[in-house]
Length: 366
Image (cartoon, rainbow, N blue to C red; front, side, top):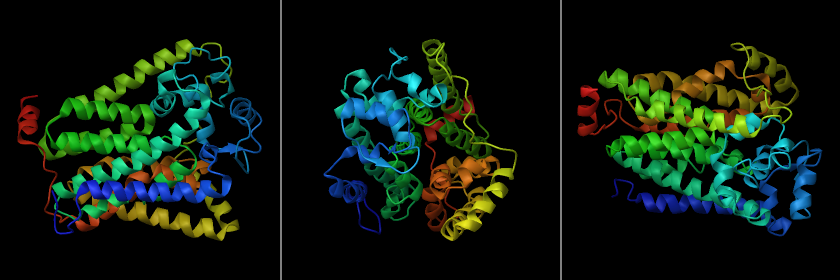
């Protein structure tokens, strides 16, 4: 199906893949096609980088302590936490890291892939997720009568591109939420609930996306779509029980994330560091402006992609200075907003979310 733009969703998906592959090649070609560039080992990481060298030989490192990918690499080598002393014990915050299980579970072939395959799988999963996300966002654009090229808001999303760069799970998590929206528009509530659960198991904050859709449904239709929030919460709870059992006795299990602070404290604390880095100051102000502009537009709309992103604008108030200080961190926190904002600008205000009539009838019965 195409619309005025004349670009079918599958082609948008291919363009999304091309964008991701081009960016990956730009990084890897000068390094001899070394995929460890996207595992984000740090040259000052005292545990994770030696672990990577022990399993892979020489690895590409970057300045500092490294990023999320090195933790996901460790998890992917033992995704069921059957040998936590040799793997999970090397994580900086084992429980926190272990909650994000889906990405390393798939990258590790559910425990069957060797480390040399895991590093490629991590990259390939994120590249495919960018492509599938572009396709799904284009399908949503068709439903709302706007150009399908808006689907490129997934592979061009700065927050998701940073996720690609550091081997993070945020791309997969967000794309699972987009898949849930498409499933809802097709009256597949159970499938949508499963996708929301997958998103939450990839990145726990994606439960906020499901909560935003639940709230829109209730405000728009005065019905409660319980499966889309109960299922991911149950999935998170079940996995948490499992990992607490498996990681019992591992040092650092109770460590916090450091991602949240009292309202606006993190933003104000980060402002001082921005003054020392003019580029960070400019970029961060652009991000803040985008979030501020997004909120009233989203509240006036009935677009599911916007209401799913709306809770992330609320989270901005309580993010810590650790998140706000670096634009690459804050952009990842706001990634759903950056894809939703162009939809809000182009979708006519009178257009509502086209919920399935069968689903609406079920909601009224519930």
